[in-house]
Length: 169
Ligand SMILES: [Zn+2]
Image 1 (cartoon, rainbow, N blue to C red):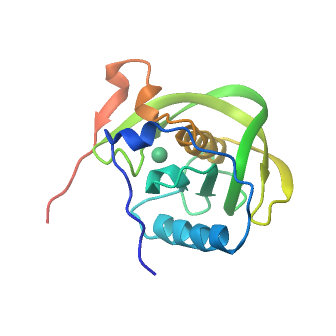
Image 2: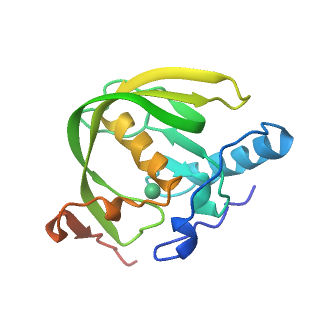
Image 3: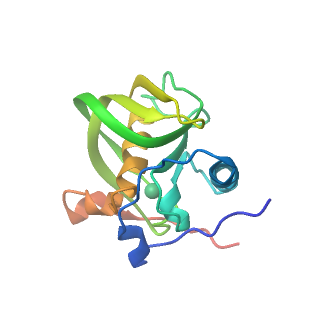
């Protein structure tokens, strides 16, 4: 399988609003397989959203299970969420975020600490769960992509933006 090409800032296609998923058939599932493959084969990646590969449907992939962070005490492993919506939230958290579409920067972003999520699973069945800390942040970050928003749109001031160190071989 080949990795899908990831759009990078300032590509205007990252700003497009994604459409709800209604057809959970074979084409959709084939696309999800490629999206998962692309996420797992990108460096330090814990999530990806369909519009990042120029498919403007409301699907996100999240897997926080291999990431060490003090708030990542429990997580749900691999999540494939379509039409995700946050139906309740509580608290605040600030984590340094990065993004495959913004390879040169990381930034401190304020998010909800706890969220309750509703979404459709890979077969179109509606599911509901809650999560907190790191995994909740990743879900909020990926959900933003569906509405054309990047983490750099959410940083409070320039001092919260950091140039990523690139180590040349
Ligand atoms: Zn991102």
